[in-house]
Amino acid sequence: MAAMTKSSKALGVICTIWTSNDDLLQGHAEELDLGSDDDEPLLIPSKHKKSKQHAKPLKIIPTGSDGSSSNSEDSEDDDGPTTMANMEARSRALDAKAALEANLDVEEIQLAALQGQDEEEDDDVDMDGEIDDGGEAFHLPTAEEREEERKSGGPDVHVVQRRMRECVRALGNFTKMAAKGRSRSEYTEQLISDIANYYGYNEFLAEKLFLLFPVAEAIEFFEANEIARPVTIRTNTLRTRRRDLAQALVNRGVNLEPIGKWTNVGLQVFESSVPIGATPEYLAGHYMLQAASSFLPVIALAPQPNERVLDMASAPGGKTTHIAALLQNTGVVFANDTNKQRTKSLTANVHRLGCKNVVVCSYDGREFPKVIGGFDRVLLDAPCSGTGVISKDSSVKINKSDRDFDLLSHLQKQLILCAIDSVSPESKTGGYLVYSTCSVMVDENEAVVDYALRKRPNVKLVDTGLEFGREGYTKYRGKTFNPTLRLTRRFYPHVHNMDGFYVAKFKVERKAKTRVAADDNEQVGSKVVIEEEEQKSDSGKEHVSFDPEEDKPYLHEAIRRRMKSKGLRPLPRTKVSAVVQSADA
Ligand SMILES: C[S@@+](CC[C@H](N)C(=O)[O-])C[C@H]1O[C@@H](n2cnc3c(N)ncnc32)[C@H](O)[C@@H]1O
Image (cartoon, rainbow, N blue to C red; front, side, top):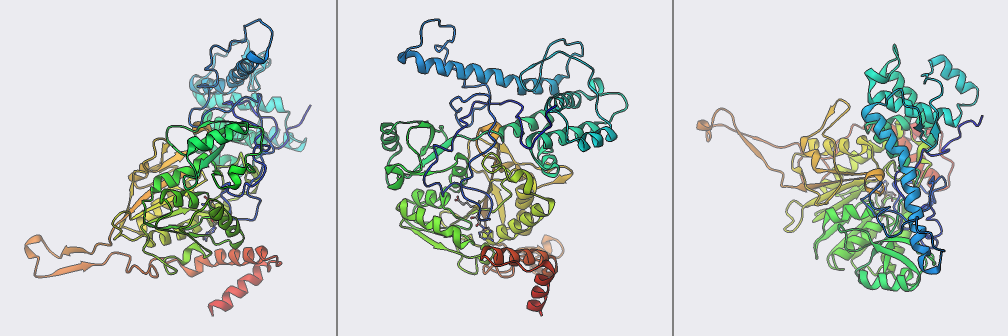
């Protein structure tokens, strides 16, 4: 019996998506947006793409069954010989058929979760699209049996598939479907463990991701992470028009289409006989290779000509160059990134795309607004766990721990306060901050935004202006957030066919002094208490008040990372601690 392997066989596919992007992306790909601040290559080809068909990708936003089988003329029942003229149509029909067949898997999971299944069912389509003859009754293993299974090298792939389906089914209709005497948490635990095994995650992350969704949807999410997202490019309107760019690329043998109504600069590339990252148009800066999701924060930011904009964590510059284009090369964009190495590709992109209004700098974002403040708009595309881009970087599946999320969320909270304090509430045209991440985790998104709302009473959330996306959580696993968090937007691979992403937009207002009458209104004029709000001045210095003791572990880690990035052997943790203590003294 074949034992399970990491990131092994996928359960099926939810939607028809191009699965071999690596060839398309040869050449310069430095602008692809990853969520980590490490020195990983910026384009990590997906190694574990699982797809039962190699059909053309679906459009961005519509996913699943809509769209892939739309071309009814392309009927596979046509018996005539295949000719040059009908070859493409036939191939599309086959793709559509394969997509439909593969979709059965997830659809069945959804059905099972919603209704439970008739126990007397004879034939059953299993998760791998095969017929399950019913066989023996499903048996949820006991703790001892699971331990035994682990010792013997893990369960067989078919056993896991069946068990996952049965657990989803039981959790969808617990009273009817669950075995007597077994608890919901036993089924959940088993399902998470199988998901981790099947898709190659550590159990910690598998659970964290699983808990974000209803049971059947969680499977869709994990499935979508096995499939590459569509290749997309953004027209650089400083150099060309989308129509002209599309024509030039079509002439080179590129098959493309506009991404969707929500962007007038995006193109989705279906196939190409030339590497998209090395065409003359690419080299001349007519476009940026950029994930569709990373258009969203800039659309939400909506910079206006002549404004001063800060892009606080900007390398390699996908969003900076988009902002510069929306400013039509007027005003100024401060493109900052703490990682000097990464600012090289940022600078290269700024030059290639002909952005003349960009100043590149390299500070820790937490030094703003001391470095410079008073911006009309600030974008904080924060360093994050990258849990929205697992299909691009599958290492996330196993390299994230609880501590990483603590560190990230702490850094994000520090950065967001500095970003808020860098916005000028006096701005005549702006006064906005957009916070974004390519993470789907609540700790890095809603929890950070909610924290900012609590710490800065002069900011409020406003509509992002984005036409789609799910509402942000206002409640999550016992935590209650500010109700305006619903104005923030979440994007998911399995829902929108784009990387997982999060966008929040704040309006920064003047720091009002609240006058509170000591007694009642009648007494105004006799005794008035002026209550200063928590924040004190525009310099921002006083705003970020973190406890130095609490910060020590984070500082230690920053020192070790900096040494590593300089090629030095990081000091052992105990020594770093001594360095920090002597610096304190
Ligand atoms: C998600 S990436 C940014 C992608 C970029 N906005 C784009 O569109 O191309 C996050 C960036 O944050 C940077 N970063 C990490 N910690 C930072 C800090 N403390 N201050 C400023 N930048 C930081 C990383 O070097 C990384 O380039």
